[in-house]
Image 1 (cartoon, rainbow, N blue to C red):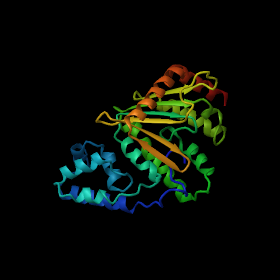
Image 2: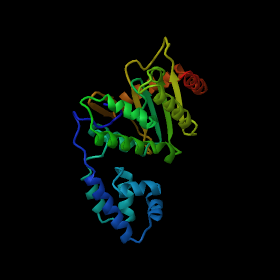
Image 3: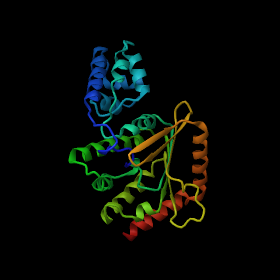
Image 4: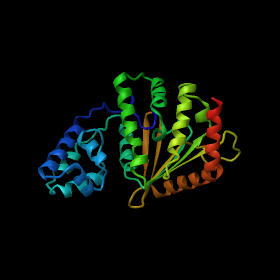
Length: 279
């Protein structure tokens, strides 16, 4: 599967009914308590936009949101019970949802990709080009739902300025020109723009590289607010959240080695700019 996106094989059918219901309960309790969205956002320590997204049924609330909202709204137990029915998240595969929840509150995210540009950095045109090659084919509604989920995740880059995002991307991901020249040109422009954020770093692993610690596949790592590290591996029609500290430590060591093997941040930006100019 493509970066946790929903396909038609090996995943659950998607519905946002439970999210909308949960959001309506949050909104009703908030209004009953006489709180504006801004006031409530301050109490639960999430942005006003995040509160709005949850209330409108567009975003899966992470456990911290549920716990803080429960406390702020009277500890009735209603929100925790309602959260127990949130089995689905539109646009995300069943196996990816737990990682997505951790991703939403992580204080550090490290991503090495050799298959495709990671979802947090994709443009809409690039994501749609990937969806066009999905088999079995996706219908229009599935493609729209997939992009909506990805766009929502991308808000993390700007809404969590204290979260450190690190990416190591293979040079061939840009050379492949997925979707065509115009799509690749826009993609490079977008990646260059995103890496101007202080909390985002991106390095390119050059095409010619005699020593490479990541040949066994992609690496996704994150650190929670409690300073616990998790890893995630994804293959075709499956994904695996890894909590075993010994396995996570091995992947951390490989990622650290790749940081020294990839181009520096400055050289990576220079390479992308040259590639952009050649298109």
